[in-house]
Length: 441
Ligand code: CA
Image (cartoon, rainbow, N blue to C red):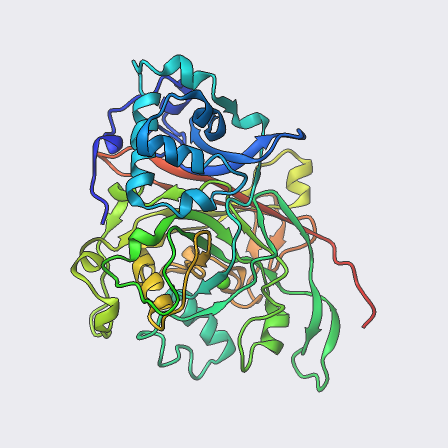
């Protein structure tokens, strides 16, 4: 597990002035990765690192000769149009690059002039999905979400008996994952309305969100070789925000017996910025189980996982309706929670995924599952916040929502803050619903 080092020192200041402002997501202690280019340009996408309201262009850094050794090699790997080559390196290379950039971006650095020439303003940038995602697996690590959903689908038997023993997941679809700013058409499909004897066909009527984190796999494992929990985090590059858009009416009809399919694979949105586990080190917290719950089986258990396997990441969901947009109003907060409430950790997800010999590859993406906390206002999906559509959410401008309407935008935000550490953030993950295009039924 990553320990604190000089890059986490909360007293560090950067010569990039915007990185020192109180509310910034991107102080010099964060240094998350994305792929970007200047908006509407013919430039190639390449890796970048956020600092304040700027981006350090890794392709320019690699050309500049300002970095040396392992850090220079890592910057070169990060200069490509996806981060897979950088992700395929190891914790030593990622750390060397972080340390070198941290030193070069600090106040008083001799490299200021050279690095200044490598900056691109975030206001001028557009982003792409950070990696070529070969495989996407979505987990289900919130006990509160699993229980709330289970009550609606199976009132007599909400939490299935495997939940507290197995980190539940399913294989998702990578092709429809888009970066923040993604717009997608409301899905159409089959549903079975309550009381009907035959299914209907048409636009989804119960379109929902799922507040999740995405975990990008770094170095992979060979087919047949499980990753021990003590090494699991060495295979994790970093964490982003993830919205797993969900068509609840389609899901309710199709999900048995093989699980989610068309209700989930029409769109998934991720934030451009991937925050490294090293940056998150100050925000590790103990992983605990409620009294009376079973402890994880030995392969999912370690001293390090128990003492600091969880992360205290603050999460928030905002909803902006077309009326709010037209009136110039910002999105309204509909949920606030923390990742610390998850029932399974990042290390446990990765270990469990490989225990049968399944091989993960650099750039693979693991979804955490909807990160609902213990109380209703901490629920990360409308199906919970509205109790299955029965209790609409009141918005500040007088509008209501049970499910998403055409034109609605959802904004996910994530950040970490506490006394004695620098506040770091994930930026935003925004997606917008467009009207359905209805084919013949
Ligand atoms: Ca999900």
